[in-house]
Length: 120
Image (cartoon, rainbow, N blue to C red):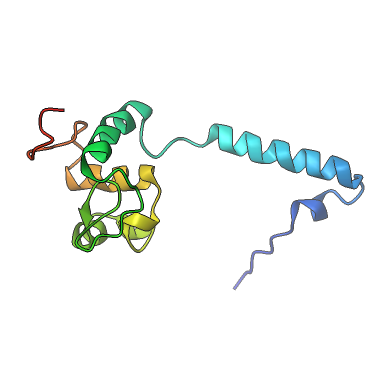
């Protein structure tokens, strides 16, 4: 069985002065962050932010029954892919919570609000 050995960025540039190594590390992180596709498209996130404002105003809401910024149950979180991100909705990022909400709604782009928030 092969083992992958990971080395710190500094080990890959042993001949560079320390200040150059930090500079290169900063640019590598910025490059990776720039090319990472967001989990949820900005326009979809904007629509779900309206649900968030109507529901809890707190992405870290701990329940007792409905959790996170969108007021999800733990059952929905667990059965629609939330565990890939965090054990509960309130420990996940807003984008992760919206991604799970989209799975619950089978990918419908518009949030489904049938409650008192229906006329936002």
